[in-house]
Length: 119
Ligand SMILES: [Zn+2]
Ligand SMILES: [Zn+2]
Image (cartoon, rainbow, N blue to C red; front, side):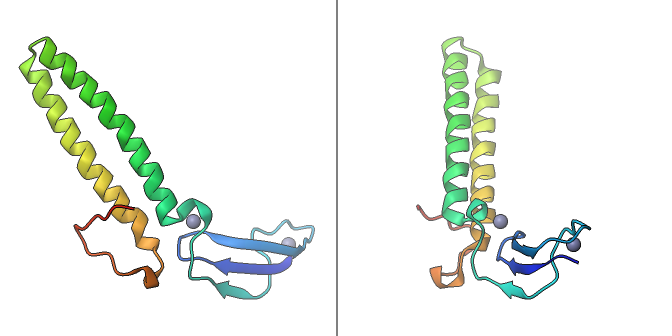
């Protein structure tokens, strides 16, 4: 059995430190387990929210451009479709932001459903 420490985080990830490796190449080392009231860098709420906003900003720009074209070409059905997709993208963005914020450390305050603050 490998020896080392495992630190569980608020997100589904953990920090694994191997002090001694055995020949078995175990997935997790044998040793003390710790809890840390924080997330890994990838799950850090403000980092995640930044990525999510950037992603949806690209989607929004793309859809707005398509909408502009549809208006220009006078295609009503395409305009409706773009309006719908813009609304869908916005609510998907809000959902993802809420999900990302679930790992916030408690001292930063409770997040109420439906409320999205600016970073
Ligand atoms: Zn091992
Ligand atoms: Zn994580």
